[in-house]
Amino acid sequence: MADADYESVLCVKPEVHVYRIPPRASNRGYRAAEWQLDQPSWSGRLRVTSRGKAAFIKLEDRTTGELFAQSSVDQFPGIAVESVTDSSRYFVICIEDGNGRRAFIGVGFADRGDAFDFNVALQDHFKWVKQQTEFAKQAQNPDPGPKLDLGFKEGQTIKINIANIKKKEGPAAKPRPLSAGPNLLPPPPGSKTPTQHSTPQPAADAGMLFDLGGFSSEPAASTAASTDTWGDFTTASSSNNNNGQSSTGWVQF
Image (cartoon, rainbow, N blue to C red; front, top):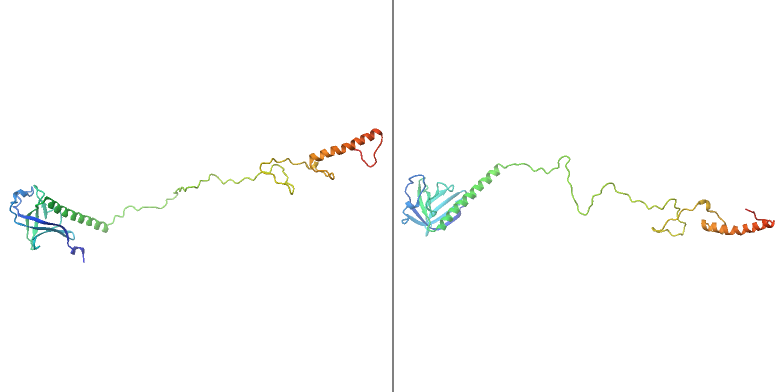
């Protein structure tokens, strides 16, 4: 079933008065002061309903609910409902009898708040109708608009900063090996490897290393031992030469 088949109640006011109004004399609008306000033609209940985009003003008996007159409203403000120029509690509405005949009558509310609610109910309904019409037009003719291009252009790059990662500048440096000093011979077996803070010793001259039997092969020690040992023989040889004697089996240096 279509939504137009449902009737919604927008506003209900329990007391309203209906007046016969004289024909409009000019385009200046209706004036409620020209009506006989103390002699209403009818009094009863007013209901404002809606079916689809149309609104209806129904004048009903307040006890039985019998319909006295009805006005179909296609727009507001418009010809169907018009405010008077000298009061906010009175309106002129166009009623129909269902046979095509129409008449204009005056409607007045005893309370100013009721008149305000009647006016707002019609305004809200036709504001909703306008919104629905705009939505329907947009659905039939959607606006394509500019498309959002999220692709990268040629040569375009992005930069991403990630915490705790430092940028490396230049090629990675290779660790340099520890230098053992110029012409440093490897340590002998069983010796202790010098620590990082030890001062490297200068390399020994290979020409000074010779074997003297039980003598030490260290340069300084061998030199001292040779001097002391051969010193005795040199002294003895010198004494023998001085005495004119030679020692058999010993070679004089």
